[in-house]
Image (cartoon, rainbow, N blue to C red; front, side, top):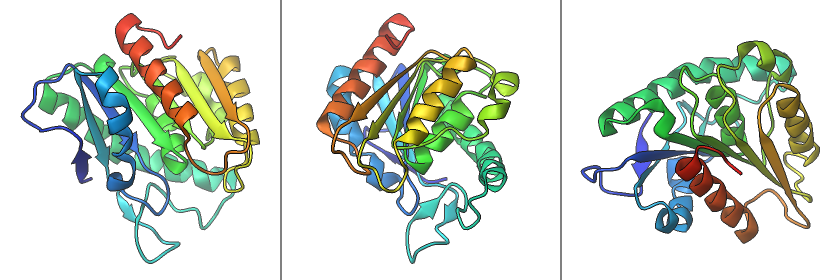
Length: 217
C-alpha cells in the first residue's frame, strides 16, 4: 500500500497516527486531518495509506474490500482479507520509525472506520487509541473471542448520514461496551456523511489523552 505522509520521513517521531480512507477515495483524501491534529501532537507522524484494491463501484479511488455483496458475512470476510495487508503496513511503518505497537493510533472514515475497528481490536499489540468516523463495527458477534486488547475507542457520526446510518455507531458502541472495550460515541445533529469541526476537535482531544495518559478519557 502506498502511503501519503504529512511530515518528512526523516523526522524523528515517537508516535504514529495512521489515517484510513473511505470507499472510492485514497490516502490523499484523509491526510488533510493531520493539519487539524498535528499542532497538538508535535511528536506524531501522520500517514495515510491507499487501500489495497481499486474501487469496483466507480471509475477511480480505492477500496479496502468490495461492497458489491453487502451481506454481513461477506463484508466481514472482506475486512478479514484486508486486515493482513493493513497489519503488514502498520508493522512496516512502526519498524521504519523504530516505534513499539503501543505508539500507534488508528483513525478511519466510513469503510476506513470499519477497518480501524476490525484491525485495531485484533492487533498483537493493541494501539493507544482508535477513532472511527461515520462507520460501523463488523463481525461484532466474534469480537469478545477475537479481541487481543481493549484500546479506548471514540466513535463520531452525523445524525443525518444517509450513507452509513447513525444507528451503526449506536450499535457499535453497545457491542464494544459488551465486549469490555472503553468507548464513547458522539452524534452530531444535522451532519451528513462527513466530519465537522466538533468531530475533529473531539478526535484531537482523544488522541492527546490516549498518548499522554494511556487512556482516551
